[in-house]
Length: 261
Length: 283
Ligand SMILES: Nc1ncnc2c1ncn2[C@@H]1O[C@H](COP(=O)(O)OP(=O)(O)OP(=O)(O)O)[C@@H](O)[C@H]1O
Ligand SMILES: [Mg+2]
Image (cartoon, rainbow over all chains, first blue to last red; front, side, top):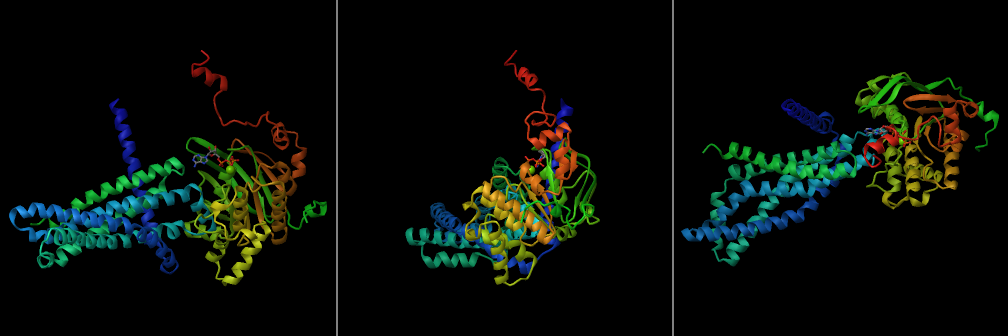
């Protein structure tokens, strides 16, 4: 009984390790082994459109709402201490350091990650990947690599856009609606935000998250069981694993960046 | 073109000039042994047909030749290059000599018909766009779909998609073309056209063709050599004439298309009665 369980555990562990190996291989084969920048450029532009531009709406709308909520909540808390002028600083710091990279990554996993997995999975199921191979084109380079690069490039940009829109949304609520002096809002923010400490660290997070989400999405698509059921499971796994990984890595990165108080 | 005269059969190329040779190959998928120490030879410049019941591994055999699957043991030689031992780069070079029509067509869904057929040419040559256009239109004309260039794969019928895929498979004029069930889903007219096309390509350009097909009459009419597979083994081989005269029961059943006989119609399973009894319904 116990042996049986132990055996199953071992089997699971082994297959997880193998999965890790395969995902590493995909990353290696498509990026490290043989980059082909010239051929890839048009493909990359197309993928940046699919992965980045099409995610823009959801990012902008969410950014605006989250900024507005932050402004409102920040105001109601800070007003009790008479320091509602600090709302600009609070909004900017929480967005730049945490919310922009994390929420963008979660939305990105749901919007772009799942689409990547489903697309690649479907290509596998309809033998398009196999037929690319038979034509003598490496699917790692043609299909996987542009999507990976597009994800790496788009995620930090989207995160920046999210932060900007969020700060603007908070200003809309705090300054235009609740009547905080706009000079105080912006000046406080300007004084409190440090470029290296806050903006750069937030960007680093976004780069890391973009890497993780795209890698998971591409791997799940490439490795899925090529049936409709397999694809739907892989898509779910992409969103779940990518979200968990983002939150986990967020803690690690935060501890590394801001932990040494 | 296409009339089988004896002179035509006594063709220019001898049957013993071998382009692909499979030696003692064994292949297992999961626990199921698909090929058991199988050996066969594909003559150069000829049409070789692979036949056999559904699920015996005909598609698998083509994928093994294309290097998409690796055998457990044995060799797959293409002009003395052992395909399973090639590294990724050499494999891609070898594949430029091959064209494959997949059973499912496998058209690229994000490109229209024209770009699908042009894709191999664009990838492997530096031809100017006007020449690519001419080649693609010729290939599409050959399969009767020159008018469909602007359609997307989702707008094609099954039979049309397969013909586009065929045009794509031959767009680079490869040395070896593998057709996985090219006739399935074609109406009698298209079928006749395809049979002639495959034959013409083979004779005019000297392509080696490997055809997997269930359409016995069509296959017998164009193939120079036929292998019949069943249960992981070659159960018969020979020219169409030889096969037609075979009196082994297994082959007769296949050539005549009889439902009952030694070639199993069913995927391996316990006796039907036994399994039904186990379910308890008949207890
Ligand atoms: N991806 C796979 N994983 C496991 N088993 C597979 C896989 N693909 C095919 N098989 C098994 O391999 C065997 C041969 O499959 P294959 O597709 O080569 O048959 P086939 O001869 O082409 O049949 P058909 O005439 O129906 O196309 C089948 O029994 C099938 O169950
Ligand atoms: Mg098949």
